[in-house]
Length: 247
Ligand code: SAM
Image (cartoon, helix red, strand yellow):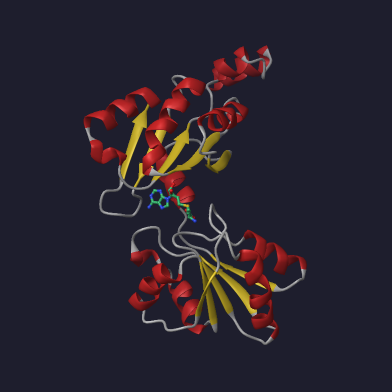
């Protein structure tokens, strides 16, 4: 039987494609890509000519059988998405789940992911974090999801698109008030920028400089300070005292 290779690809800078990722793609018999036209550009760039099939949100279930047949015939199959690590706010979960439960060999070829790149340079606590990906598009659902997690003692990591970034910051201000926010924009690209401050101050930055609203964003919220935790009744006095003393 062949193996499925889950291959991370760049999130902007093509030099981030690892040598192992390149070799895996070059040696694959079949590549399943989220958007084949998009991935052809990456594959052309590295001189790889391998048959491609699409695998996206709308056809993933029907592709599972096709890929299973390829593996049964001894082929090596690579899974890639448009950018970063497949399955991380990208297609692939149903395929990997189906193949894992049938005990196929699945091999990760790790590499870029906006989530980890953003966290690694944000200056926020990383020993505990919660990745919520894209919040629901509708305002009420988004605010509800934020309030479900706002008091957890973890760094919160969100993905957002340029046309909703201001709305997201408005909702963060409504639900989380003065919470410290770090935005990682256009990671690994020419206009890579980190901005930090309250949601309100970031909105003001965007109002002053419309370029700050362009591109791709990872939005990170600091964990609540101990006082907020105490106010919400989540820690007892002793715990609060010891965390204050630690600080
Ligand atoms: N699978 C990808 C990963 O591993 O990061 C994520 C794919 S998801 C469809 C796309 C979202 O990831 C964007 O809307 C943005 O929130 C984030 N993202 C992807 N590339 C980025 C970059 N270069 N800079 C900042 N955020 C990025």
